[in-house]
Length: 407
Image (tube, rainbow, N blue to C red):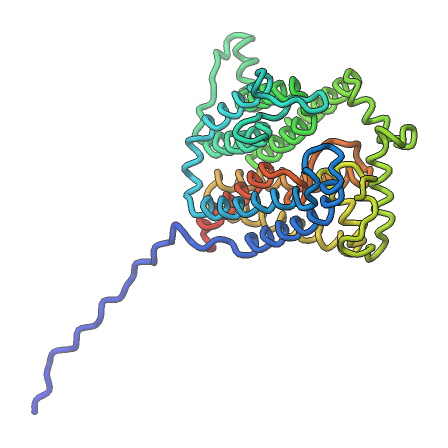
């Protein structure tokens, strides 16, 4: 039988590269670290809060020992839902909404001074009553991160200003343009307005956090290092003037340097916090066995919860918790380095820098390395709306991670 002279047809080889997925999987290490910290935070909040809730010195809890824990647990469950929903959304839609969110934050931060809307606590009006009591400055931090990130992500599209080089004023203008001054003007206006609104509340700790956020994003965005030296010097000088001109800030510095000068009043927090840390030793007195939380340590469920952690879990337990915080922060910055675009990268830098600063500042205050600032410990300190916003921010980081090329 004659062989066929026809050659078999070769299969067409696929030369096209597979298309890159726009949506991948969320970053599991980041999510698991977040969940772990929230769960540990709830356990420590239950331990730290039940004495003050049971004895109800402030007439808030009605003697319910689980009052703070139950409310925080509800917000944690809501937070997990919010984190999941946000992680499924396309974060790039926020780029066009950044200015709107910032303007809304400005209006709400101003609204705290409107009678009937704002809540005054110890001479500071930082909260709104509706829909529940919360601080608009938390939205302000988020708006600042989005606005700076959105604007810096389009930095290459900016058209440089040009002035007449034949005049002295024009040459000076061109010099300022080359130095990057005019590029920084919008950022400077935003941060000045933000700090001005916080000054009338007053809210010094939030002002410091805003400056830290702005500096981190601008640095990651490629702004020249010289501006940070100038801006840092200006910020330190302004902060010094504010401290010297404000009685409550001056008293805080005095108590920080010598808390024993007023051990039963203004210096009590620092003293009791250090006693709690010292009592914990290496391995702690055991979970639930803290003595300082029995109305000796003010705000044991809030700003000074880490002192209870040190007392009950000791140096070893506290170090392990800080190590988990460090792993989460490092993983966040790793995700920023591998983000799909500059906007996503800068958003993560802003969120994780704020998170890292809050952890560092809170631990520094508890150990009396810093004066009392009112900065809470993320995921641990009592505060439902703060926890909800923190978990929403973690959801945004997860949303950005889903579009990383490596995923």
